[in-house]
Amino acid sequence: MREWIPLAKAEAWAMWRASVLQARETAQVRTALVVSVVQPVVLLVIVSQGSAPVGSRQTTEMVFGCVMIALWSATLWGAGTLLRREMAEGTFAALLVRPVSLLSVLMGKTLGIAALGLIRTVAATAVAVPLLGLRPEVPRASTAVMVIVSAVLSAATMGLLLSCAIVLSRAGLRIIEALGYPVFVLGGLLIPPEMLPAVLRWPAQVVSLRHLSDVVHESAHGRTPGVTPYLAIGLLTAVYLTCGVAALSAVLRRGRAKGTLELV
Image (tube, helix red, strand yellow):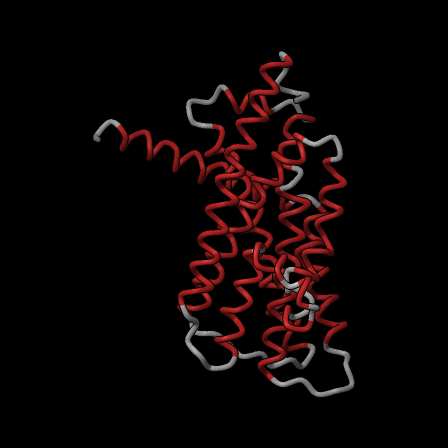
């Protein structure tokens, strides 16, 4: 048991360092700035220009939807293209020879992308909301912390899975394009699921960010969120991680079979 403690510390430190370095690198990318700062502010401006008055509860859900759209976009274009960028820059093979596992490094990188994206979006939203005259309900501190942590962890595992799936598929970038707006609509981030036809509501159940909106919905209505949404988020996050690990193994197997780890 004692032998595993130093190994666990090394893996945790590697994950932390990878997340910090990736966040610094992502901070210099203009596209990431547009996705995490400009996009949510523009969406808030659009939804706040309606002629009908909107209550604080509905405002809370609209603001949260804009934040989740920005987080999903950051996950798609940041974490989703992570492995392809590592291969294009010739750094993928170097990650394999480190004394820590590749999974820890990649998870750290996707955590850095998701955390930076959410921090930027929340900061931009916090500035834009009062300027636009919006008055959302402020959730309890415990609920806000749970939502933020769940969102970052779930987005990071989704990013790991996407980055491997995009490498394995010949139509990698097309996958990103195909998953953008359908998740916005069917995942309950843009349109409430109850407003969709019954046949289109089930895809929302496999999007963890959709269940986060249930937590915010209950909190905005003055109710304490139940455990069901959190269980759904935890289960889906575990599924994303399991599928991501399997996809990463497939990437490495195919790379070794072809004799190259740069152009898998």
